[in-house]
Every structure is written in C-alpha cells, then in structure tokens.
Length: 193
Image 1 (cartoon, one colour):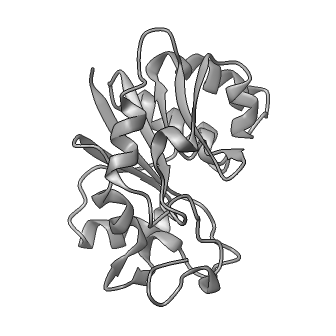
Image 2: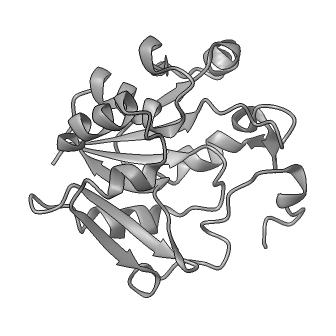
Image 3: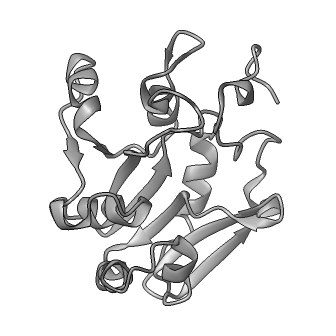
C-alpha cells in the first residue's frame, strides 16, 4: 500500500490574520508541527503563491499550487491537485492548522485502509474529522464531480464514498488532538488545551 501525506496549506486564514502554515508556535511553523506527526511517507504541501517563497526557504521540495481550474475551491481542490499530480494508493489528508495531531493516530487510521473502503475518517468530539483522514485514489472522480457541481463541502464528497468511520475510543486520542487553530487565541502558551 503506497501512501502520500498531503498538507493543505492554501487557505486564506482571514480570522487568524496571517497564513497559519507559517505562523511560528513553540519555535517552529505550524505546518512543521503537523508534518512531524504524519505517516512515514512522502509529504506534499498544497499552498498558494504567496507562501511558495516561505516553503522554499524551509527546504520544502514538494509544494504545489491548486490546479488552476480548481483554485479557490477549498480542501477538495487541494485533494484533487494532490491526487492528480502524485500517484499513490492512499492519501493522508490533513490541515496545516492541527498542530496537536499525533503520529500514533495516523498509524491507527491507516490500519483501517483496505479495498472495501474509499475513505477512513475519524469521529471525534461528536463529529467527523475529514481533514485528518485517509482517502483512496479511487475518490478522485468523485472529488472531480463535486468540484464540477460546485459541491465544495467535504461532507458532500463523503456522501458519495464508502467511508469507514473510526470512533474516538478506537483511536485513543488526546483531548486537544483534533483542535484546529482558527484564531491566535486558539494557541495556548503551554501547548495544551
């Protein structure tokens, strides 16, 4: 089973006030906190033009802009771009603003990947967490269809797929692991929530 890690770092970060991926927290940019906790596989970053010099300066090689036709269409555009440009069986898709995720959780999620499911999505804190989840390459035509139909919410995509939902108790998650950062006050000084 081949896997590629995909960090989505192309959002506007309006509420945060600056690009979240490059915001330094506890000595390193948020995206690096995320990258360190992903599966042992190639990591690609989907971003926007303004952040390309930042990522290049950090030595990142695989940084791509959303497909031109899909640019500005949110996470689905990033997923589409990653699957179009990089061959793999599975894609661990994560947002750049989840600095508390853990490699152990990614590994448990990957253990649910098989030929009978299209996506493996955790269910934590009473809701699905589709931006720290695994998607099979066979999702690509469904993602493309959602984009063409302007159905840009990931929940629209999930309705078209065979999804293995993994409950919180099977993941042994920490209390803050799926906390995403929308504004600066969401980042506690000590790293705990």
